Length: 370
Figure: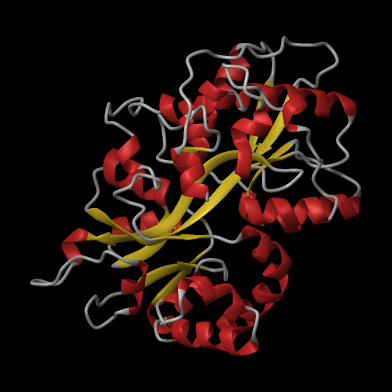
């Protein structure tokens, strides 16, 4: 459904103007994101243009999105919410909303309409996976590999399943130090049908099967906790192959010209976007809502794709995706949604993970410690 939604897009031409600076808005805003090329794309597409329209505003960036759930829980318990806007994956947005840690939004009141008048609710459509989620991008977790380390006479990797083939592709691997994506890939590459993966993970047998498959490469794996690590490990030659967000790999390949290729098959599709922490003071809430109205504009979402290869999450933005801001290359072929890249995709079930994440986190970390 997600791929169909993204590909069925309407053309648009105009830019929605942001709200004017108001005296009752806070003059500082703390935004939480992931660092690296992705955060830079947000600065270029959103916060710098917004600051240019709001003289005197200070925007502080915090690179703690990977720990957003635990840190917002702690801030709430302490009664001290220090963040104003937080970039999270869809499953974490659902969890934070369910726990009352994220504020519910009204898409047609809080998000910009499309230039042709289409409501934000209709334009974002299926991307509005939670009452608290403000969709921003479609991204994927896929695999990068060192092109100069592929053994002679061997075809380069094409699939996530190639990470488990240490005989054909020797060398260290890198995987995210969390169960999401790893558990799905393990079962899929162990012969479980795509449509049966989450049913299997609801059983102890399925979890054990996934961990057993991961166990076949455990001794060869470096476990990353920050999204910059896999590109760094690939650049240094410490690993042959590793999972990473497709935008990080794009940056390494196209911007830094490193000898890295991408294995797109069974890329893990996901959504990413903003949540507004619940309980903000009125002046801070007024500021962040003004920023969100600006940053969810059709042109703004398309502008982010000038800096990183993630697809905009609203229908009216995709036709406006053009060339990279500095490289001058067309960005559409580098998107996870491009037909040449999306032949075999695995769509992350964020609702399922919102319900099961804490339990599988505990089991996964216990397995890692063994």
